[in-house]
Length: 213
Picture (cartoon, helix red, strand yellow):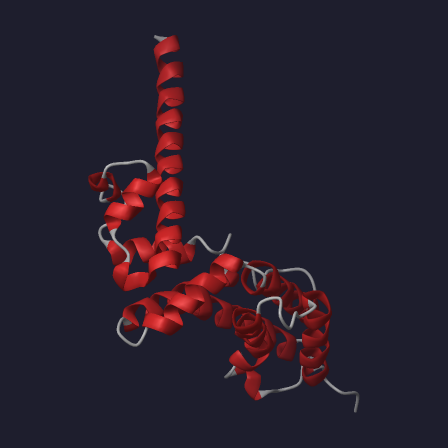
């Protein structure tokens, strides 16, 4: 009896592991199809072929192409920005530095993100729902995280009162420009992202720090 009870959890864990691996294979194949063909032209048959599964298997994990696209976008980040901002410990400036650094590491430097942004620019006019998905999964959590850190810094007297709390897009704008720059120019007019990030942080923090009276 004891051995049966011991085997059951192991079997369940192996089954869950296989299920998670298959889902990751579907997401990897879906990203390639979306990036190569765009949203409208992407076919689940091609996703299934790339993942080495039957098309019907996709529906065990994702209801339709829209839900699959949303999962692909969500997989671009290891963890949502609003889940890691404003945690206890560290000054507001340190947390803002961490947020901006993470934005460069996971978004600006991420070729997969650039592929999805390119797709959005090309097709969101016909499919506004895919822009909404990107906003919900990437942009809105990032803006929420920045608002939280700004509010914390203002409350602690580290940052001055600023309209950036209402418009945190201003703080992220240099990062968005870097994405567009790399999409347009590639290596032709290469940005030194490390130096660019430092300039971004210096510019943002210089405008936020509370000046001595």
